[in-house]
Length: 237
Image (cartoon, rainbow, N blue to C red; front, side):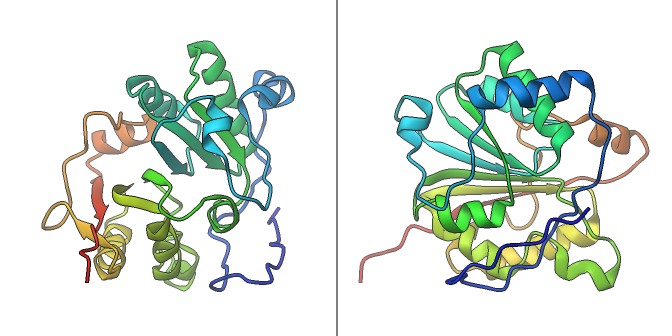
């Protein structure tokens, strides 16, 4: 099933869906987690600015993750960096349920979950210059050329995300599709608010733990490409 977008009166750019919500099988534990744990660790979409300090009960730099899969890596990163707050967004119910379960099992107090279209969340809930970091790991590659317009990393969305980064905030992407990696590099390089931390791609940071899917691909000889850009510090006129 494809979730159709709701039209926004003042949308800054055309919104092409980068995801399709498939009717995946939900385990009993995942279903129970959404029913019982989302009220504790989840955040409902509202078309108003997010108050992160109230949400987490403390002031701390906020990192946004878009598309967390089953959430294992997300939970690992949050556990490794307790000094940061994390807001993780995905649309697929099994992954949402699994991450909620991981939050409870690992007693993570610095991680919240949303089940909504990330573009609408960024447009309407994330204030400018409010994010310490952005994580986008292994987004749908939409491998067929005619579907490339559905890829998440596009100039308009990158410009929107960049405006939400604090000065010197970071933007970290990873993919196992070389063609998509090259597009990511081209799009991020072209965004005037961002500067590459390398001449091209970077080694995977230690704190980005490998996913099961990623390890399987590496064993088969597949490549993985990481990119880390930072928000440019604007010099005064």
